[in-house]
Image 1: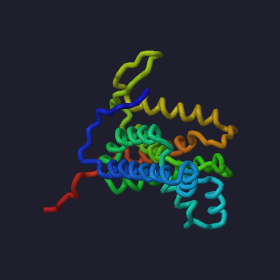
Image 2: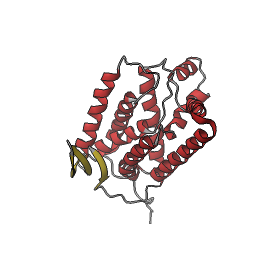
Image 3: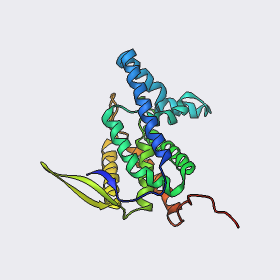
Image 4: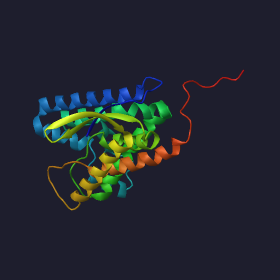
Length: 237
């Protein structure tokens, strides 16, 4: 089930969402430049330097080095991606669901929420494999937080989705609760299956998705009963 768009209108231009998408494309172009000039080895060094390496992060935090490259990597990793499919898939989800969350809470709050969601997601993955030397990169954790907030605040929003039925597919509108609930259940299943598995090549950081989604859902509970952030400050006559 692949979401294509939602039927949930926004009241303002999602400037932060668009800026985040643009920043991810710029960062990916940078990665392609590193690959062109330094080859696979150069790109591996770049990803290790700017991604989250759990073992390095764990060592930095234990040593009290909260202002260090391994800690800064939590933020820079949110803009790096492992390939076109990784990038485009993440940006599709961010565009569909991020604009509504931004519209609901306001631009500055959404930016802070997005970055905090990415931090929570990285923390969840590092907690599962604190000695891993495989870098974590991608906006998936922060986007998972956005999905968690969206499904809590807009559970009945209609999502146009591409559903595959064997060799056939169909476009149908289904509630956000079903689309994102199904996605989260898959993360739980795959995350449980990945426990104890080791791979030098890395893979999908399922627990970053789970942790980000859970953090976003908790944040969504805090704003669900509140009115949307006003478009303009109220004036007193």
